Length: 432
Image 1 (cartoon, rainbow, N blue to C red):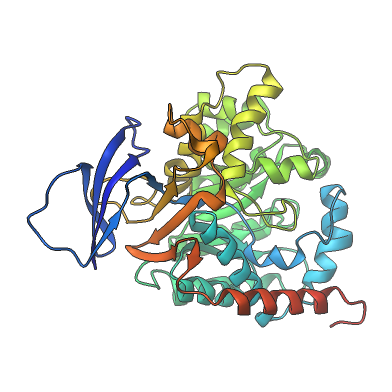
Image 2 (image 1 turned 90 degrees about the horizontal axis):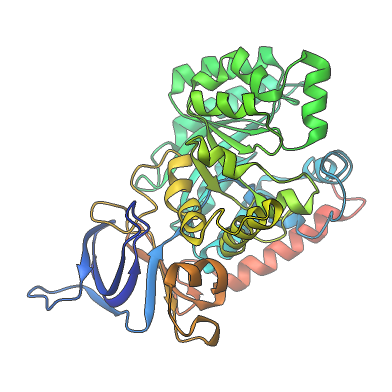
């Protein structure tokens, strides 16, 4: 379809941070062909969407998460990460079936779309079901089958990852791309990581891994190998590959220099890190070094929502407050992290900016809300004041997936019912 979004305030999130007042956007097929001042068009469109009193911005790119963990939302709160994993999460995950992952992912996609996320980066298992859910919903997704390098399923994970990449890379009219997903240095020993590197050489897809999320993790690695997780990964050769590193909370100056020198991308997850008591990532120091830093929610089991607006706000406020410097992580910085920089972090070249030639992944926000009046600074409004309920339209690949706040491709009532039933079954003591 050819669509004209007419007369909206356009927050482009381009490198110049341009905002077009009363602008037009033309979408042809899955891409944007025009962004600029409003004008009278001497051509016809399949659809014209009135943007008067609305703001249009790029859809959010959630750079790190575990979508199906939405089924464990509020199940294990207010405990440290390793206890959370070993005593609460992993025992329940051992019960998961393919159908559970499908419906948990559908629940996450529903939540993400309604709150303006148009792309999500995911690492989990039963990833065929995650990809199927994304394809059916029309969402953009960057997916990795999670790998654990210890135990009897380690080799099987590599085989399944290889098949997953071959089956899904470029599916969904190109909306679905793939990665390899070694979980973390403490669950993937160096000899296993070398097998991941060999597989990456064969498949030529990026690697998505958790790094230095907690002090406990860093201390474990130092006790076992005598170096930090970042140095360990450098020494295995993993960082010579395209890498998206989630968390990166506890980094030394040397670690940050290594991430910069090897071009590692980082996914900052402020909400999850705060809730699990993991700490605060040194994002200002990473940005000062020129490291690409995107923004993610992590899974709903540790957040407990998938609201990228909340993550933007946290990313801005957290670093200002912890370092007592209000100039750190400006609204422009936070918005870029949630869109353009998250897309870069996920190795997506044509997502995250409202510009000709880019994918038409857009959100429209109703500015006629008390908390969005007056409109002195639209970027500041997006980061500090806007709420998911202000979003009236969400578009991915030129297709409207949310209109008037309601999904167009998903059966919301069915998803909520299925997710509730499956979550109840999973946490029953006798479920299997």
